Image (cartoon, rainbow, N blue to C red; front, side):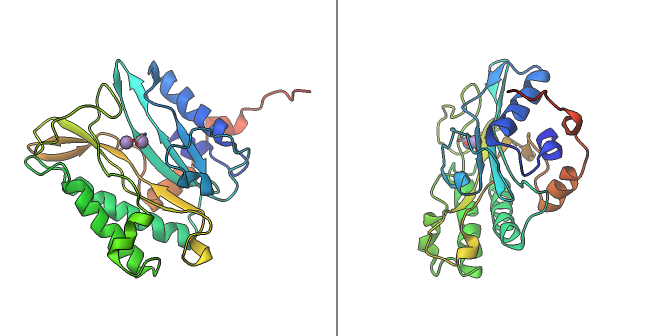
Length: 242
Ligand code: GLY
Ligand code: MN
Ligand code: MN
């Protein structure tokens, strides 16, 4: 939420990373749970991008995959937001598919479901969405743009151990679909450089899935509204260095 308020197009990827890490350390987290990923535009298409060294994110989407480690346990959360505070029509079209895919994946995260259930549900939404937008022709092509798994166990480690048997109560997993369209992809140029992942930490209970990271805005409307809020960092100016 603080990064959404503070974000502007002339921030660097490293500065955005620094704001995340400062805020969660101010809340008492001891460490990063894993190397932070902050990728503007095409950099968001690089799955384990940790250089975070673009000096200005400009008007692109910024994909931010970061997690605080608190008393030994780690979070693993991704938000993708427009640096200028407003999704373009193309960015929103891709974002909304990933959002619906994640919603389907979260709904499938129930006691007794097979470990692959959230991934299957999410992939189906991505397949249908990319076909509707004309980015792919057949469902089998969807993996070109969604080339990773949807869920892993989360706990003491970011990719924690587990049984891969049907879900038991009190299991925590991530649900993290994404669509990545690198420059040069075999589709209309208007989609190039758009990369979206949305990742939340889901506690599976007898009463259904609980989103532990729900406080971070997730719909395009909620993100745009949060980005309009003032930030304490708006007035934070450092002396110029020679
Ligand atoms: N941040 C690593 C992952 O999402 O699995
Ligand atoms: Mn993850
Ligand atoms: Mn992650």
